[in-house]
Amino acid sequence: MSIHSCLQKLGRSVLLASVFLVSNAFAGHVYNLTHSDSEGGGEAESATILVDGAKVKMSGLDEDSEVIFDGSSNTLIMVNHAEKSYLKMDKESIEELSAKLSQAMEEMERQLANVPPAQRKMMERMMKGKMPAMDEPEIETTVNRTGETDTVAGYEAEKVEVSSTDGSSQELWVVPWSKLGGAEDISQAFTGMSSLFDDLMGALSQGPMAGFVDGKLKSGWLGKLQSLEGFPVMAKVYDQAGELVSETLLSDIEERAIAGSEFKAPKGYKMQKMKM
Image (tube, rainbow, N blue to C red; front, side, top):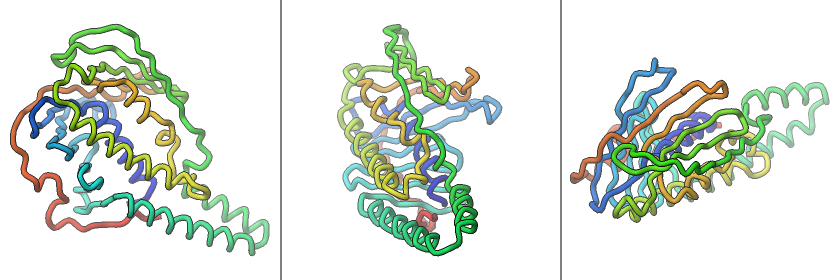
């Protein structure tokens, strides 16, 4: 799995998870969601978020993949069912990846310094072609708390509008943490997950590695969502033309025991490393 595609999948899953991680006062819960995507014909599909203490598992939010986070070990696992493989990330592996990529880029730059100018320009164009985010501007977001309230998914929620400088936008219906009894544990788990995500973004944003980081992932949307002091129970995403791209809604929450194996990579799956 390439670094760029991995970051895109991870960013999408973390964003959707951040929109729907809410909790009651019991340890094991299954959050049932409905998600429709215009690219899939707008047909509603089911997705789930399993929550047990500091452990979170997200399924169905991205095709053929799952994201697992264990807050006790600060470890994130990305499962690829299509390839029967998984990536495992923690702070140590992120530091190792950053060092290897930086070393590879520095070596490439040293080699470029020894080639004729015309050939150097051709090689630089090839490098940029493999790193499409290098020339993309960073996307900024603006959050507007409208003060408008309504009952959504059984909760009294506030309408929040999120607009981006690329012309896309979101409509979020946010429920305050204070109305989601017992939400402290899951909020801490998500804080740990977002912190690990930020470590990855920070490592890949240094020096020559900046080209690997997609502008959307550098925009700081994660911090802005956390500043809402709550999480949306419904999210509508619109493209630059104002057309609805996707809609996700919390349908119900089940309380039940969750097996520990749910928060591990499936048996028989091969652990992979991110490729350049």
